[in-house]
Amino acid sequence: MKRNSVIAFLFVMTLVLLALPLSIAAQEPINYDDLALLRWYPANETATFHAGQHPSALAFDGSHMWVANYWSATVTEIQTNDGTVVGTYSVGNKPWKLAYDGANLWVSNLGDHSVTRLRASDGTVLSTTVLGANYGPLGMAFDGTYMWVAYENLVVKMNSNGSRRATYPVPGPYDLACDGANIWVTSPAHNNVVELSPSGTVLGTYTVGTQPHGIAFDGANMWVANYGSNNVTELSSTGTVVGTYSVGNQPWGIAFDGTNMWVGNSGDGTVTKILASNGTILGTFNVGRAPWAVAFDGANIWVANHADGTLSKR
Image 1: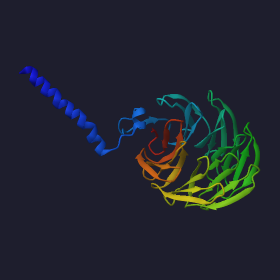
Image 2: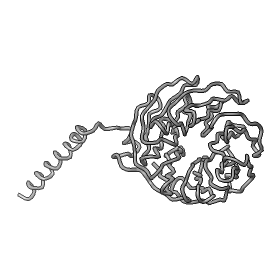
Image 3: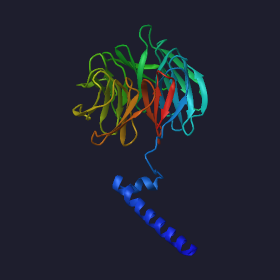
Image 4: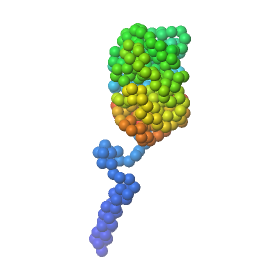
């Protein structure tokens, strides 16, 4: 009798186990690519780290993530695998934006109108260049040779040693991106994007949404986060609007991960993930308060949450 009970129990369990995959399949198709990557279920993969006071910008140097700490007058270097702080380095007053040139980190210091250049290998300050006495520098972009900086109603082109090379008039510049040849500049006050040639010639001025802030290149098109209209504009290489996509409240920073665009929505503490190939919204995820900056480290997306002093990693 005991032996028959064991056999019956095993028979019932076999039926249950055979039925389980069918019940799961009825709820959601099996994604074998996810299984191969050990993504067993849609878990919350977000980690949270702390840097300095009110992080405002991010930049990845190929091995570490760098964070501009607006109220600390510092930048923090972070190990991307576990969030360990490698070092914290003094820069100018109110560091606002960061850019990496392949060897050095550049910091635009809004409070003292300067640009600081740090050696990425050890955080040594190599130069500090004061651009003027009025309004401080904002966004920056590297074109492979020169660093470009938005400053007042100008874009400043800087040599690798931190000296000025040239200045070009652009009304109300805010953030910059390079498409491999030309520099694209957002102008929140004018609701447009200006495209500059390497010599500073204006190649086009393109209308986008209201108060464009962050800008990023996906290898073919430019994407612009429109803070005032709660959407993102995709521009072709000729400045034609490819699409306009609704996101969260007050989109600010934007970054490309090789497949998707990620947009930090500063007004509601979320990031929106957009499939770059067709503009499909893939999801909206909670992060911290006032996510200003977004960056990709080759594996994960990082978000600088300005209001609560945290970094979110997805």
